[in-house]
Length: 316
Image (tube, rainbow, N blue to C red; front, side):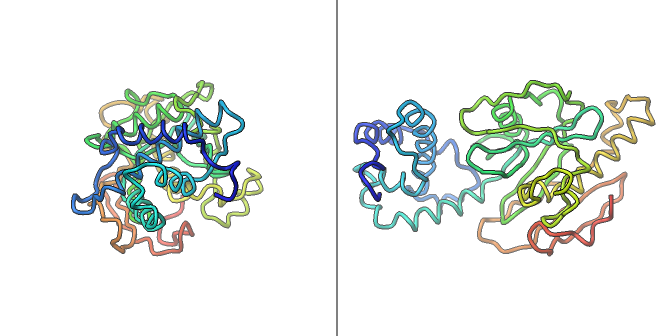
């Protein structure tokens, strides 16, 4: 650290190191091959949780404590913990490997749609500046994708989707080797009182008009309507066209059936993204998606620039 003022007090480091040493870190790891599970990488997941705990509780209660980034925090922890000191000189390398592992862990969440099918709920992370995304998070060991989505949405916005979502209605994409699956949840009232269950994770929750969200990162029309840089929706853009198709279809079904679109025949009309085999984190492959519409299936090979326009997808 550059100054004594930025040093975490020894007593606090003692508490955090004891917490890390006893933390059941393996509970939070999944889809990492056994031969690649080095002890230091596993410990880094515990260090990350300790970092959040330090910011959420220690720093909030003591204005004299310095909020540091994960790299500076990890270095102090590694220097202070006896069982980690031997790895301090390779910390940067371990951080790189750990971040690569993190990207291999699938994330699950939900797309919350209001009764009019005109708005979608987006969240803004506490430490992610101006970026907007869907409520979602990483799966835990022995946790099913659906249960992960239920847990993450409940933690991030305080809304229980258990009885509203269906396990076979979801959108799914793969980005940089990481699987992202979002379950579709409709008929969520606009006046729902959302409230995060976790501390300092979600900064803001907001309903956005689906029609105004950007199709790509240079969508000036969207920027004029929302007064937000389209790049702030970089985690949303890959799903926008598919959400609009799903909404258009669901709304049409609802209208044709006098508002009763929750019957058993829904399963024959949903916008379903089939799960692909999970790719290991270093494998270089193009992202693919398979969509099913009324029994007709087509595949789209996404080779466009990151979050750019998909010229092969049919217009909404």
